[in-house]
Image 1 (cartoon, rainbow, N blue to C red):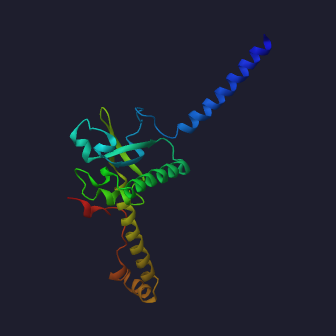
Image 2: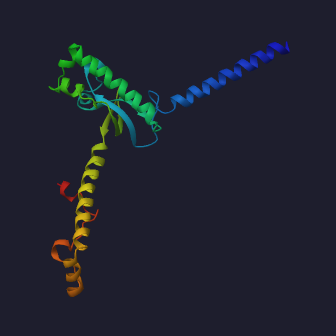
Length: 198
């Protein structure tokens, strides 16, 4: 009796350890209907297509990105594997001339969009939940705009600092107490996106 009890306890312990490792592995992404505690999520999304994703609950869904994956943890190795797999699947569909690739009700260049090597990529998005679908409003493009603008501001700062290091600029500063006009104003981050304002 004691031998069978120990066998059962050993087997249950081993199954518990595999269950915990499986749950730890699966915990990098949200399960189907699991709601996130944050407003924004790291997601993989794709353009909605009736033939691929099913009939939409509401017509507005057709104009959004469909959320394929939502991630809790930034495990880039696993996320990159998923991205690579999904992009390869779409490239195979494009190359096989699958009927739905050439037939999209909204995007006439859908085939070109799908054939892009980075069609599926990691995005920051706000997820909106409908009865049957989860769609995304992408936020990543704002980060890209800020990065581009900061690069140009940083380049201008470096140019101004180089001008201020020139002997003529130093003499002008010593004599007048201010920098020459071409290197007087140093741009800052404050107001860097004012041009985007309506």
